[in-house]
Image (cartoon, rainbow, N blue to C red; front, side, top):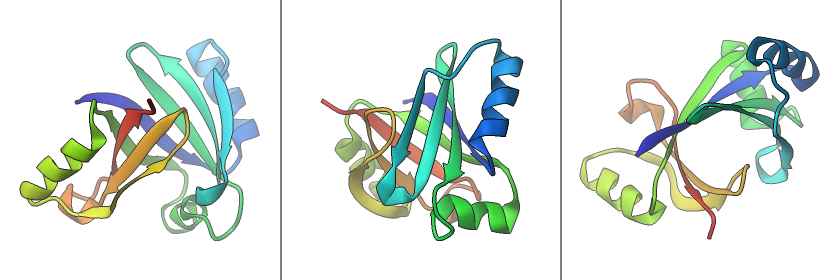
Length: 132
């Protein structure tokens, strides 16, 4: 398991893309919408890990609710895994709680599941696997 990306909730991808392009000295490599989650994302390569900026595409999306409650900032840590189903089973045996145990299609050609922050010291943790 390795740190795949850090997700950052933002109010405006336009403003945040400009900021991160200046900060990192490069443009995002991918922008994509995940309709099911009500989010638009931009991805930046940062060496072995990435940064994912997340903007809500509707007021009912989880990102919109997160920003309303906590403001802009770090939303989640994502760890890349080889076999997401096996990792879910392993972590369940270790006592971790999942928001959903069924992998779903996420951004950047990944299958994803999220661990509940109650079982990870208040941090939303995503597991992601490259789609085959």
